[in-house]
Image 1 (cartoon, rainbow, N blue to C red):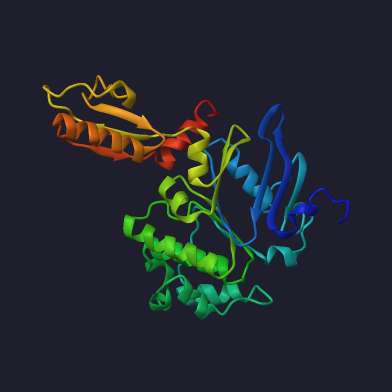
Image 2: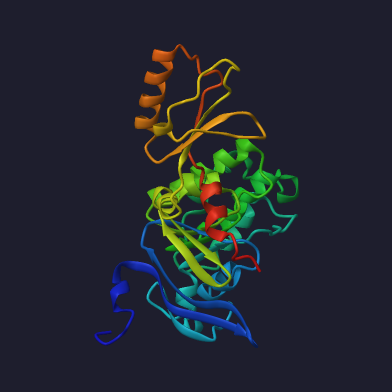
Length: 310
């Protein structure tokens, strides 16, 4: 490996250099670099048609690439042996377990396919299905079926887990419970590549975020780092009384013609609030409906992907 261009990925689960996937003249993936560190949860975000699914299918070994270099757990997925496949766990966006089996039977059957599986009962406990182990899968709720999907992906004791939209269709309570399961994967040393359209989910679960659009990587980093890249600002707003004086120019305040709110956009909300409240106290202004809204990951994501839809 001394002359291998992917030698730097000795501590990574996934290493990609200049990955391309063309369909005729159409570049579904157009020269991306990607690195996923062993033991981290990385959120891979992109709109429909961005190249996200194509990239993941190449990493999983289900699709051949046009060009570029790819190593997943130290192996090129196009030439990976069966032993490599046993180190990969995949939770698809949609799947349906065998309806006649109980949850426990389904997990035990899946475990039988592996040489060194996790203990099925421990796996059921990890995903919170111990009390439902004797229930037929056709009678499981949507959230329980998603837990079973995760159990089936984990019972082979994989090093790397691909989670594709793991909480789609969940109610808020079920989503939060699923977050705990996913965080537990980090606790037991697994590497996770997560795709989701829920920005709060990506921000809560991931160590890092990668955004892809039109086949290219648009940004990467933590949620805070992505916000810095688009110069996202905190918005301070309030609904003034008609008799209130105009704020001083140094605050950069403006009036929204639609809502009538006075708004201040700032990178340093603490300093801006200090100056605003000092001025309001001196002038006897009550600042009704005062609100401080920091930029959300969704705001940042929309700025990053604007103009990159296909």
